[in-house]
Amino acid sequence: MDCICLKVREDQIGFVADNARSLVEARFEEGLYTRAVYCDDTMVGFVLFDYDPEIPGWCMSRFMIGAQYQGQGLGKEAVLRFLDFMREEMKVGELYIHVELENTTAYEMYQKLGFRFVKPIQYEFDGVVYRERQMKICL
Image (cartoon, rainbow, N blue to C red):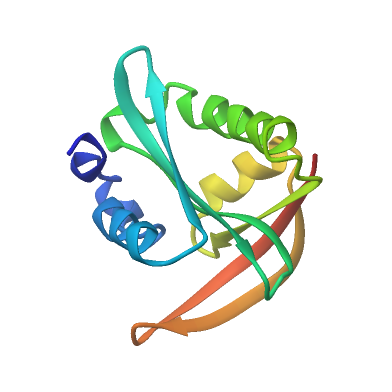
């Protein structure tokens, strides 16, 4: 319930799927993995990741920090720890992400963390057209 109750700010809706949807997809679609983001004993965020055969490569498919926890450096710290996890535990050499074109704050954060632009991506899912930047980091 802690995960489902986490929401992004109003102006960020559409940048990442609702956590309830992500949890349902991870439960019923093989190959989707989840991680909770904690600050002390409080769940503050959520990560969904998978191996995408279309890339082909590992992808941090969804990442969010709850609205009430943003602006405290928790997103940056969570991404850095996730990168460590992927490198050390999963033995992954590179990781991809997709960032909505309008999500300039996330794009800039990922650039500062070492992700580099690969190419623009456009696709349709559930009747919605998404326009994103694919980015990659070598671990």
